[in-house]
Length: 462
Ligand code: GLU
Image (cartoon, rainbow, N blue to C red):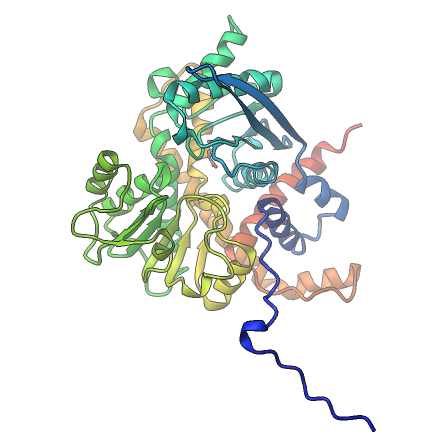
């Protein structure tokens, strides 16, 4: 006789762990694209495949010799994602976690970012996998020169134009320019790289542009009413994760615009002060001690805790995948402004959207940097230097227009869901039903259309 079997319930410590979240940045970038593509009926499947894949990925391996005679070998990448709208554009980062897939993802985000702000560039990105903080300044310079020499003719003023990114700055860009200029005497090489020092063809306002763009986009989105009962940054509480070029300057600019910076962090940890921190004093402390931690009159927190501080606006300004499925429930901000590239995973995006937390996505929020890079490139080609006020005014118009375009796209798509669904069903019945889109998907829809249209207009050669 068969015995009744009881349903098997395992004790909590033996229950199967959920599938780990896929944190590969290129998989994430592709899934973001695929989600948006469902709302773009004019995108044929083959065209989508072409647009989401990079045109080229170069891997270079090269040595440098340290002052003690040791030879170190480095692996570097440069990915050109799209040249449909113009030459490739995007930064070079130095970080031990750089991988081919990270660079591919970052390059594709550059394509969509340049399209969101409507500048005539495609997307590119590069990186060398090492920790520059562990080498001397002169050894890092050797890495820069050998990397640029190894890339050879694969970068150029009208093909692929680097810029600063994580752990690289105007000084690095000066070395990139010099290396390239040594290899190309007798021509104007200034437009080969942007983010250069101001006295070497750099644009006024470029250093602050990523952070200033974040502020402009935030102000415009709040004016447009994306956060109930908050129409400006005046009096808003702000937490900033990452205190490098983007984060530290964002702290200063949000503070000057009347926000209260209550928490900041860097790679060593964070600090919190409910009454507000003075960003200039925190920067001076970091310069002196190497970190924001230990700042007088503030409470020390872990870097992770800064993400979960209760605040109006959270600005992740460091690396990818910091807001994930496993910590998103603890995030207590009302608005997330992505100064970093790729800080929020798709699972976290979904959960935030369900909770009504708005996310101004990286391809909009941090596009101020590449926008002023474009202005620098134009100035270099024209042998001009624009006033800082002119640069900032142009940036303000660009960012406001981009924020409006993304918000309008979201509203139009969400208002037209039934029509979109009907046109999908007519082509391929029985698919997953379309649901309202968040601002990231709206930004993708806008950007992918802006790349798909010129692709179709140009035609696929031959
Ligand atoms: N690395 C920056 C970004 O991710 C700037 C790129 C540029 O100026 O080309 O947007």
